[in-house]
Image (cartoon, rainbow, N blue to C red; front, top):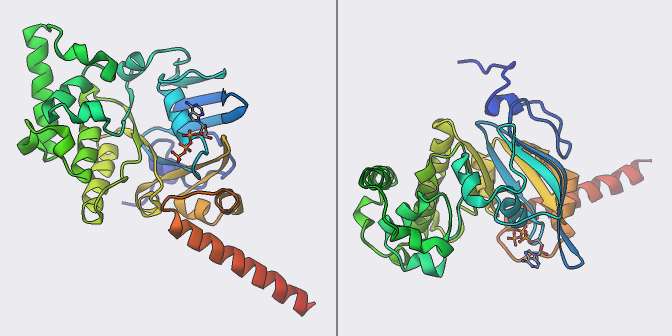
Amino acid sequence: MPADTNATTGPAALQGLATEPGVPKPDPILVGDKIKRSFGGLTAVDVGHIEVQRGAITALIGPNGAGKTTLFNLLTGFDKPDSGTWSFNDQSLSGVPAFKVARRGMVRTFQLTKVLAKLTVIENMRLGATGQRGEKFLSALFRPLWKSQEDEITRRADDLLARFKLDTKREDFAGSLSGGQRKLLEMARALMVDPELVMLDEPMAGVNPALKQSLLGRVKSLREDGRTVLFVEHDMDMVRDISDWVIVMAQGEIVAEGTPAQVMADERVIDAYLGAHHDTDLTELDHEAVQAQAEAELDEEEAKHDD
Ligand SMILES: Nc1ncnc2c1ncn2[C@@H]1O[C@H](COP(=O)(O)OP(=O)(O)OP(=O)(O)O)[C@@H](O)[C@H]1O
């Protein structure tokens, strides 16, 4: 089927957009303005404008300390900004607590913490249904629920575990799962509230390369189910493979946006990475960036000699 060049919805609509930071999207599910968060004298986030396209997979990348996690925390109500406003499905989310944000259809995954690792897989899933109250609300597990509500939660959890091929691990402690299985559990748990927007925190971290493809398939299937995905990731292969759009942060600000191919060739992105000290697996981008810069310098030299 030929691509619909006039599409305003989904990933297709992103083709041909300007690559300026904060560029408006044709059908945004999430819109933020002037979001600032400082820690002491350090400005962790200073985002002028951000829009996330509905039904697309958007990657949020940037060097260590760029403010990605802080922005995730702010948007999902786990942290409070110094200033700024944002809305989800045209409804303001400023000041809305995390569990209510989740109920409205926007959830974020968390890397499995020590406490959650001590619970079984099914217990983790059931906690997901409480709308991300998190481990402070572990008591939610033991709070009496209506039997029918409990049955419904268990049924949904078991369906998701089967879909994510974790059903045989149902009674195992989450801490005993492999890196890839933990990532599947984090994702499955987030789906307990049937969210429209799923925010994934480094979905590839600690995953065995052999499992990466299957995990990538899971993320793509979220989009096929009609969900919107926003993810933070250092693994550039993943970013290239599955993102429809990439937003690049550096020093708290959005410095560039575009398709994966556009941002990876963008000077502003190369500068952001080369200008920062980082210790994660951005080697591939580094390599490309260094090569691109070397080529640019050689071209400049050649041009000088040509004159
Ligand atoms: N609770 C906090 N207290 C003080 N400083 C913080 C806090 N949280 C984050 N920061 C600082 O804010 C800046 C942005 O951090 P953040 O974790 O959001 O970056 P990031 O882009 O997610 O980095 P990484 O890729 O390493 O996870 C960093 O300089 C960090 O040290």
